[in-house]
Length: 328
Image (tube, rainbow, N blue to C red):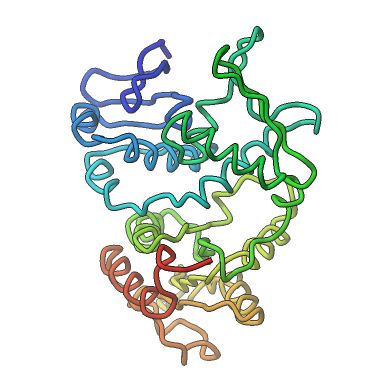
């Protein structure tokens, strides 16, 4: 990659761009690595007219790091970003605290730093991962975290340096599970298969984001723990669960046999046992393959990702409501 300028923020970045087809860019301020098409590259400045829109896009890029392929910015992405839910102040503070904790190898080492003789900084990455617009907003959030006792800080606007340390109280806050009724997270139980990717990218995720919820898929979460423990922990911290029972079919001897997604049934049942609402879905041509024990629940049936997006948005809006309208 060659050194260049990030087309989103105008900050230093590296790119591997083809002249017409776009390519990959690595930009700490934009959240890391992403792919941008040539047509989107030509329209990005007019589409991202405010820093708030840039922050929304950077947050999505930051959340996608570690996944393959990298987050893809197209002209449709630029068209849709204005309709993505605003990032609430509470969420920005929570995300910044978690960023600081992730970057704290020892309680005595600052998890967020900028300026100073070493030249090390993770300021841009912190802004992107927290959905923050600029350093002035960052410092307001740090002031709140310090007031709550979650962090300590040493910031000098005169010298342009800053260091932020997490406290034990802050580490405890990060470790504490979020009560489901306060969570903006929705756990997605579904078949992780290439033919279902569009159902998630164009159906489930945009439907939930329109209402202010984050769609959490366990296969897109980085962790070092046992996968079953991660699933259980994520469900416990979710406001509701979307279970899609679409599955594959084996055509043996001319007889179609469903490959039941046992994990989806387990995760839906576990959520029900905790009193967490379950939204039931299945592609229309496979609804008769749903097990009779759960078939009596009112499933959203869909043919296309677009139909799934509209029906799911309406169902969640009616049953759960909008996260942006919830009160703490």
